[in-house]
Length: 307
Image (cartoon, rainbow, N blue to C red; front, side, top):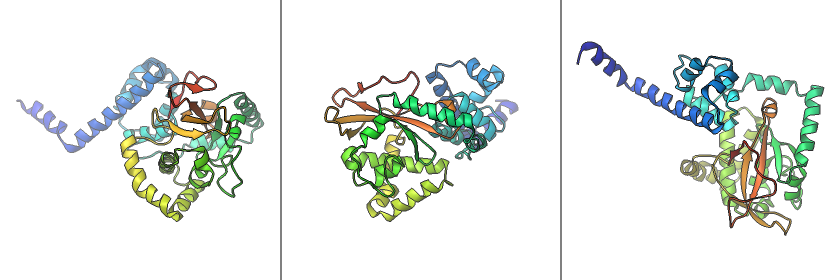
């Protein structure tokens, strides 16, 4: 073996080089999988980013000298990524969770714009035309809008000072005494909700609402033990959280006796217009427990992220 080959082999075998190579492979697999899911070519993504196809090819292979938050957020937008996927992107690319997107903060600051107000009003009317329970949340899972089917699902829930389903979805599932009557597979729902709380805090650790939910979990002895012990083990086994545990079907009971006991998938289907406002749209897809693949109500949209 000549000197040049030996030196190159030595460089490739250093721990730092091997770690960098593993990181690049993970990023490549993640980005290519997302692009394939959207049926996009490298040329399509490059056009969305406003860069050459050759440059995007380097991005996808992880051959970037220095990732910036601006590049990563642009890439996430071009590939229509959810918040969970954005976190994975940052972890694979730069080894840390993302900082708040300054562009999202800007769009939230302009939420008083009359055009934005009119858009949200019209979007609420559109949601009401859907037969499946659908709701829109902010980063802390506060419910910002919900359709009639969503309110119908929780119509029998009693008043509560902090955990109404019309106010915060995570709080309802964790703390409302009526939650087990709707989420009949309540232990599984709680594990998934606590995993979602942890995942959301990774991305938005500064959010006061999420911090408040975690404090209340710690005050509840049983939930605290589940959060600190059972939930991490569950995440290792399932590899995902509430809305990104692919194929997960959990059980609920609809108050309408004609619907009754159903399976439920949470499906995220957030358009860019909502993402720019820092909002996420979720649909509770009701599934026949005997068939598991047949949703009750309207068909799924063409592009969606399945829980």
